Structures are given as C-alpha cells and as structure tokens.
Image (cartoon, rainbow, N blue to C red; front, side, top):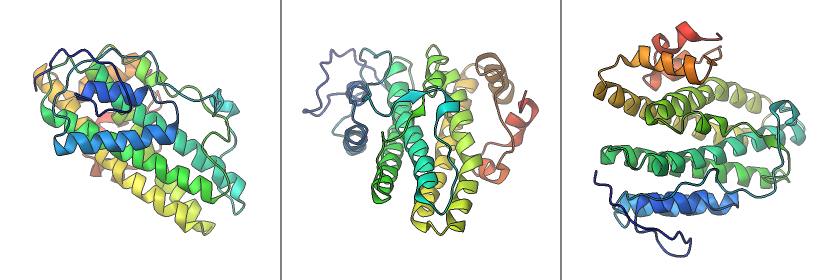
Length: 280
C-alpha cells in the first residue's frame, strides 16, 4: 500500500484527504459522541473509496478528551455490581463505555502511528472496520446510559487504559500483541458473565447490546492475531514464542485467567498462546 508524504491541517469540517489525517482528526476530538460519529463517517468514506490514500501525519501524544469523566486509579472507580437497582448497572455500563471510547482511540492511533510501516491495504481495511465497530459500541452504551438516566462522564473512570498504547508505541508487532491479543481478548473472557448477570436482573436491553459487543470482540481479536502472525512470518519468527516474549517483556505477563476458551477459539486464538504464561 503506497504511503504518500502529505502535509495535513486536520479539520473536522472537511473530509480528510488521506487516512492518517482522518485518524489525527478523530484523535483530536474531545467529545466522545462526536468522536464516535466522526469515526463512523470516516470509516464509511474509506470503505466507499472517498478516502483512498494512507498518507502520514503528526501524532499527538494522547487523544483529546473532555474534563469528564474524571480519571482516577482503578481502585477508585465506582463499584460495578450488576443489581436490580439501576445504580450498579449504570456503573458497569459507564465503565464499558469508557473502554469502548479508549478502543476507538487505539484504532486511530495504530493507523496514524504506524502509517509509515509498509502494510497491505487489508490491514487498514481491518482497523478502520474495527474503529467503526468500537464507535458503534460506544454509541450503543451511551444511548443505554441515557435510557437509565445517566450519561458517559457522570462517573469517574479508569486512568490507566492508555498504558497499553504507551508501552507499544515503538513497535507495530508489540501493539498487535498487546491490544487485540490481551486487552480485547480479556473482553471475550468477561463479557459473557456480565451478560448472564444482566439477564438475571431482567435487563435484557443492556444484555442485548453487550452481546453485539461480545460478538464483534471475537472478530477483532481474530483480525489482530492475523496481522501479528503476518509480521511474524515476515520476520521468520514463531508466533507463539514471539507473542509470549513480548507479553513477558512489555506487559509483565499479565494474562489473567479464567479464560473463555470457547470464545478465544472462535477468534483462532488457542490456549497454546496464553496458557503457559497466564497469571505469572
């Protein structure tokens, strides 16, 4: 895929001339709903061919964000217990909406940050598609929060989510090893249990939305793993050994059990990868 060196002055009012510029514009939008809506617009433009070049653009240190939610250490995030009362469910959905917003930023960051790395068009097709999914997920959760009398930003949120981006900013293979194959894979493990609890308290509307997210997460992990293995093949490395070395080095082996092996298998992510280094 050709990578033209194109000067860019990001503006949300004009359709970007290339994908890296679209990424920078999206990363620079502070309001989460607007970011998600613009992401969906740009994804459609890429998929239709209105945006066809990858390009390059300067990368911000961090995505723009509004003052709320207040970012706090993980232990200070409100308790996320699914109960009949709306308060616990709102806390859960708020935390998940924060994760989905983070996922939008990670998608655009991987596109912009590694735009100079020669990759096939299919790589960009996949990451734009994932960004579109994450934007749709965030909007689904924001809408549900509104229905429950709350909104994204109403509660404090986890401050450490961008760490996965920071520790992998130097290397595309490491980014793929950590983000889809650790962070998203964790969603495969925990989401079915949340869905079950929501159904138990008869919140079928929230459960249905999480089922959509869960099904998409499986495809995201599969796509991330596919491109990780593509890079391993180029480097003549064994994917399992390479992934384990990256996680042990950069992510301190933080692969937590229990695992949803059936869900991970659907993502073509067998236990041979993660089992030997779990909970180290």
